Amino acid sequence: MEASQSFEYRDKHFGDTEGIVVATSENVFVPTSTTTLLLAAVRKSVNPNWTSALDLGCGSGVVAVVLKKLILPDAAVSASDISEEAVALTRQNAGRHGLAIECRAGSLFEPWSGRRFDVIVDDVAGMSEPVARLSRWYPPQIRSDAGESGTRWIVPILEQAPRHLTIGGEIFFPVLTLSHEAEILRAAESSFARVELITEQWYPLGGELLNHWAVVEDLMARGMVTLQKRGSRWLWATKIYRATNPA
Ligand SMILES: C[S@@+](CC[C@H](N)C(=O)[O-])C[C@H]1O[C@@H](n2cnc3c(N)ncnc32)[C@H](O)[C@@H]1O
Image (cartoon, rainbow, N blue to C red; front, top):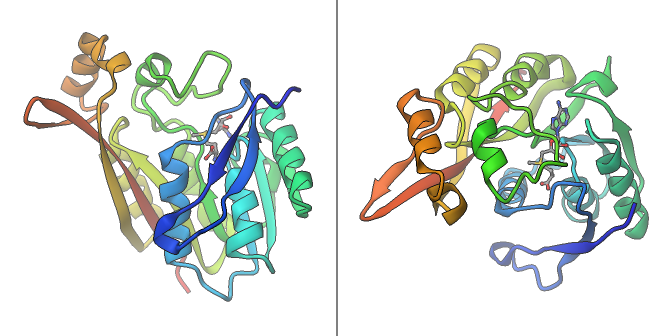
């Protein structure tokens, strides 16, 4: 597999002067602002007692690499993705940084049967499928299959996560308003007593989606996605939530 480009992680809010560079590939999801927002939420909430971490839906492995290199250098960090190419790229990126990261391929928690982690950082595809396919983020070769509501993967993840978290362990997950947010929060609240919104970021809808407004409008009418109109612009958001396993 050819690593075609690279992505540099750097967060000025934490005073990062140097970036962490990972290779990307055309066959693997390229990190976005959601990656940076998710990592910022984890950094803000970091617990020095965390000794194990899982990057679920690792893509290029950027989250696992930043966790091991910057946020939790003493923790055991693991990563998995349904895409074999993503897992291979994660291994390659870990190797480039000289990091020991345990990498496995498989859907959701399948590779981690019987394993528990202090922190899980989930970023498995969770965007309404018709929107994902029209967007620039999911070219045809990138796995999504999250369904019209975008909830196909995140709901079982939230149901199964308590069995993969230690006591008091935490899962961080993004919820895009380009998915059925209410259904995801219902699933989170039925599995976890404590679910908190850590941060959110709003963005104008891109031209590639505005050009297919009828598709977006139909999904919106059926509650599959939620957009806000501000002035002449339609906005969508990424929200980062944290759910905590009872102690
Ligand atoms: C939004 S990307 C996140 C990648 C990476 N965390 C980042 O920030 O760039 C979603 C990832 O979920 C993976 N994925 C899709 N369905 C999956 C499933 N059922 N189980 C595990 N991973 C899946 C995709 O292959 C993709 O790499």
